[in-house]
Structures are given as structure tokens and as C-alpha cells.
Length: 357
Ligand code: IPM
Ligand code: MG
Image (tube, rainbow, N blue to C red; front, side, top):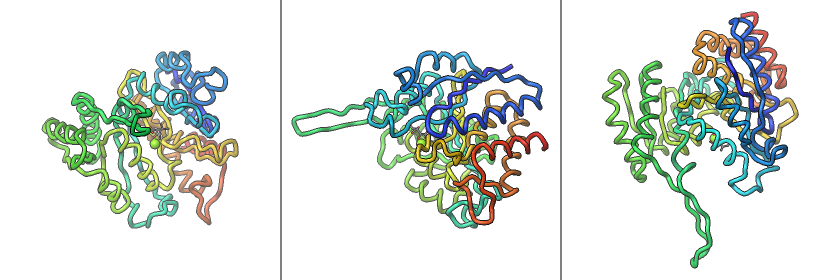
């Protein structure tokens, strides 16, 4: 039996998360393994009912669970709160930090039938199958920051801080992932300007001897942004620091047809957290327009990384592939000639494929 903490959060979160939960239930019936789901408040939803974005009982539930499934947090209603109280900075970042989730895996895989959904030309996106390994508990997000009035006017700073130990653990993990895939690692930095990047690059150079089967290449982040849309199939595993990874993963999502296709796993601690890469999409919340596939694919990552149920994970991914091949599309993926469906309908289609497949 596995205990799963379920944190739907805000915006489209309460629409997409139940679809992933139902997929996990279908998996559990097939595999004869029991999943126990417990829901808790996080983000704006928690601010509204508990007065705080990450209530201690939510954090405690996550700690007591075998895995966490999260929807999204944030929305216009809470955007005017001071940074220390906002859903993003007061719930999501502390949750990642408290659970020790230093590695964020974001696979960008293009399903064959979605080639037409990408704004990029078919010959460019074809063959996209990469994973971004983003450092998640360091860098600008967590370094010293301040905004203040000075004699010379208002000023602000954020600090990009990395220790060698922080870089070593994420880089080793990325090498290990590359070894399981096509054995190519691209380490992304800005070593021509940033000191942290020079430490990053030196650390990669020092570690690479431990993984002789993996070829490693260093790439500046600006060039990587260009290469991702110019020749994405050149990438296998990309490892990079927190902010670069945040930006590059949104960009990579477009290669898959929509950011609604990009799942993520945050690992490195005792309990891992699974969430779609997209946000709470308040503009379409409550309208059954959201694509639940990124969350369903995040649940597949949970099966793989937390429960070692690789076959079940592959079955979920294959079911998603078959539903897409049959032409069903949520609005974000829609192109003329395909069949438009809503959030719950898409979830149900995947479940049916899973049960029949
Ligand atoms: C993401 C999101 C978050 C991040 C925000 C909501 C704080 O953009 O998971 O990529 O920047 O990490
Ligand atoms: Mg982001």
C-alpha cells in the first residue's frame, strides 16, 4: 500500500488533479496495489481557508506520505500579497525546500500525433525526446535577496549562490539519467559571465570521469535557448541551475505541442513530488478547458520514480499516446480535423485506453 498526498491547489488544479488520481486508481486495480489518497490544502486555497499558503498539517501530510501529487498554485487573487505570503514563494518553494527536492526532472517528449500541434515546423520538432534536469533548491530562488530604499534611490538584489556540493549532487544525478538514456549530457551555464557558472562547469569536468560511457558537452544558456528551437533532437539530457531550468523548460514545452503536455518529478528527498510544469491558468479555470495530460504523465512519473512500477508507468504513457493518435485534443492542442474534448473527457479516454490496453 502506498500513501499519496493530493494537493490540487488553485486555478485549474482542482480540475486536472482528479483526472490523474482516477488514472492512478485504474492502475491500482490492474496491478493489485492499493493507493491511499489524502487531500490537503496548498497555495491560494490554503490562504483563503487557513490564512497561510503552506499549512503545517499539509507539510506534515507530505512528509508522512510515499509521494505527493500537486496541481498548481497561484492566481490574480493573491498576486498583490507581499512576496513572503504569495502562493508561489510561500507554498511551492518552501515545499520543495522542506522536502529536500533538489532535482526537478522535466521530460519533453513529442508524441507522433502531436507534430501538427507545435508551432514549429514538422522537420524541426520531429525526434524531440529530451529531459531537463533542473536544480531546484538553490540559485537565485533561494539566495539572499532584498529590496530597500537607499540614499541613491530604491534598490534590490537577488543572489545566485551555489556550493560545489549542491552542484555535484544534481550533476551526478543527471549523468546517471543520461546513462539510462542515450548517454549524452548537455550542461548549460553562462560561464562566460557568471562565477557560479564557472564553478558549475569545473564541477562537471571533475565528475565526468565517473561516467565514462556518457559524452558531455557544455553550452551557454543563450545558445541553448536558440538550439532548442533550431535543432531540438540534438538533446538527450540537459542539466542546469534553477532559473535557467525554469526558463528553458517552458521553452522546451512548446516542442511537445503545448505546455499542457509537460510533466515533472521533483526528487532527491525521502518523498518525491509530482506536478505539471504549467501554472494554475486562472484564465481558463473552472471551464473544463485545461489539458490534464501533464498531470496524468506526472502520475506516470510517480509510478516510475517513487513506486518502481516501470511497466505501469509505460502503460499510462502508451494510453496517452493512443488517445492522441485517435485524434482527441484539449483546446491547447486542437488543430482542425481533430476531436475537441474537455478536461474530464480526456481523463476518461486515457482511463479507458488503460483498462482496455
Ligand atoms: C515552475 C514554476 C515555478 C518556478 C513558479 C510558480 C514559482 O514556474 O515550476 O516552473 O519558477 O519554479
Ligand atoms: Mg516555470
